[in-house]
Image (cartoon, rainbow over all chains, first blue to last red):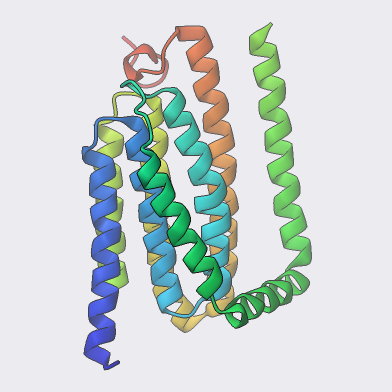
Length: 152
Length: 97
């Protein structure tokens, strides 16, 4: 691919991220807003993937989209304004088929490289990661304590 | 450079969403989008100082996780105390009469 094509690819991924953010702004339902937000996060991770920053892609996808995004979607679904819709079985089947194709065709060498990069990062920044995880657990315990006190 | 322009635009959309939010859930979503803008603005830093940029990214991700935990607690508490999550029901802060 030429440099021009690569620049076009960055612009395309960026435009998709921006469109998802605008979709999140314009939709009235919180649930769809959270879904669009998760989509925008995935495109941000896609931009990191374009620059071959694989540990960052894994972190953003797993922690930001996987944990933060899913929890936000769950909360938005709890407090959504409209009635929930039934999921079409045909769409679920299509998603299952596409996921199965991705699992079969995904090159295993990429995942091994990502894993080795992640292990390298953990060995270098082990103390920082443990400190940040401890802070997260502390915040979580404080939140549970506050919720218990409010519930009384 | 393109990433910085996209980061600014995403941040602007998130700020617009934050100031036009009618309930706290939408505010939470806008804050997460703001973090997306922050992540995008970090990409050029990887070209100059990759290790520092990665450390900043890790700290930003954990900060967003902690922010989410605190906001979830705040949403549940406000829902219990005020019987709703609308912004209008929160009168404490700078807009009290």
